[in-house]
View 1 (cartoon, one colour):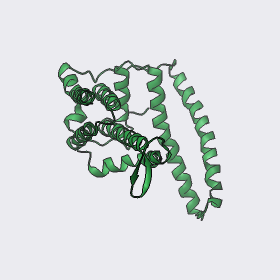
View 2 (cartoon, rainbow, N blue to C red; view 1 turned 60 degrees about the horizontal axis):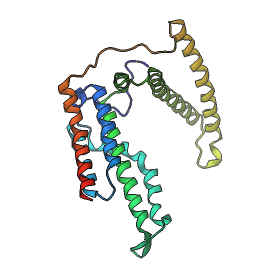
View 3 (cartoon, rainbow, N blue to C red; view 1 turned 45 degrees about the horizontal axis):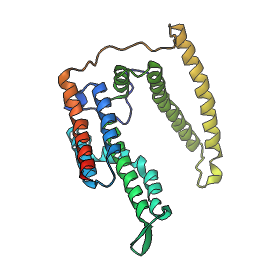
View 4 (cartoon, rainbow, N blue to C red; view 1 turned 90 degrees about the vertical axis):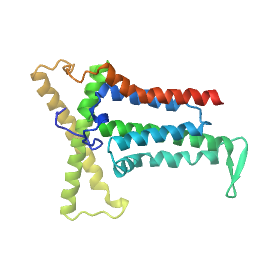
Length: 254
């Protein structure tokens, strides 16, 4: 993957969170999410603490409200699906605004929405403070198999390439008068998507041949640097350690 490639999820900055080694941030993010998932759904106060912690980190990283909010929109389909739980759940019911809703379904809805939202917000903070090449190096430092990091790197890099080609083809069609106003006019888009898929397959073969001619044997070369000291690990893992403490208190309070 090109070293200069920067994904749209990343925001440049010189904050302390940006300066942490990527492996520290990746490990902290996973441990924090595990703590959120392990928290009982009845402890609503714990989720408020988690959300406040993440919003404080986003503020400290200077990500901005609009930056975070626009990237949280990907959760909308899951929110709409979770809203159906009170209507399809069984067991005892409770009346809300004249509607009979399942009590267990309401708890399931809260559980899914709270944990999914916090997990997504964690990933937004991680991606917003860590560019893709650094994140891949962080995975390598955490002993993730190199073949997986190589696949992730190429997938992210060439997903942007494919989307860029589709945008250019769409602009070309619009410049030639194609402006569909109903589903009947999406045929050219479908054919363009098929053509891009064929081009992507052919591009992949050419890229592999170019890499093989330069000595690629199936493993990406290791990258040195981004070493983390004890102080950096301590600072990075303080947040998930606090989250696990809150989770333990939540279970103790039941």
